[in-house]
Length: 319
Image (cartoon, rainbow, N blue to C red):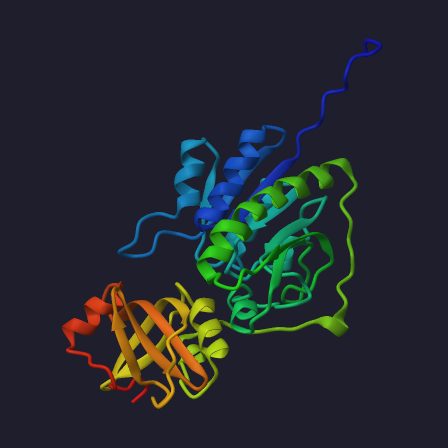
């Protein structure tokens, strides 16, 4: 090599397992950086009545081979993965079970994104629960997956604040999504440089929650305003905190604490229909609801819905 010349950095052979816009963005970021070779993208197949996954569309546009398997545990998927001889596997939003035969195959290992500060909030709804719990901080973790669920050693973490009015949607799309893409690229750089740490998680601090389902976020209007408000924003937009009106299920969105004094009103009572919002009494205050959705319907303004059902002050939710 000529004295003073820079040694060309060796490209890693990377297999990417992912889906949705997050996986798409990670793929785009790695390709744009141009320091590694993406030997294949493993994505979910097209479901009947749905379009192809964004990561598949982008991979095709970038001439990156795409492999779609309904179950990564199937031997055909494992054999295809191993045939590519990846040195590193990057998991960017994966809901399927990835077998250890894939995770352990790359010579440099496998790294995965998880949107919480592990070992806190292991599990599939790790953005919902910190907000529902009223926590003021969360973050993301890039870790080395093992046989457990979100239990592997930590490579990198980034912290974010949860603002008092933040929703699931705003925390993810404004913070954990863009920061997560950056963290995945940074983590690949550390792996390539041979400096990526493996920090064992502290099991004494571990927590786990399962999927946040609609049944988990049924509003109890007898609870305090903070409890109700945190539940609504932690489930906005998915799965949608819900209540009932005249036996009809109603999901609630765009909530805010209201300054309206609800003294004399029963919890769950409509205390005002004002502008675009309806204001509902809780045990120690009131909540303003901006949008609602009935089962199978579209989100509409709360006041518009109120007019359509002839909602009146004093009507009760939750019955």
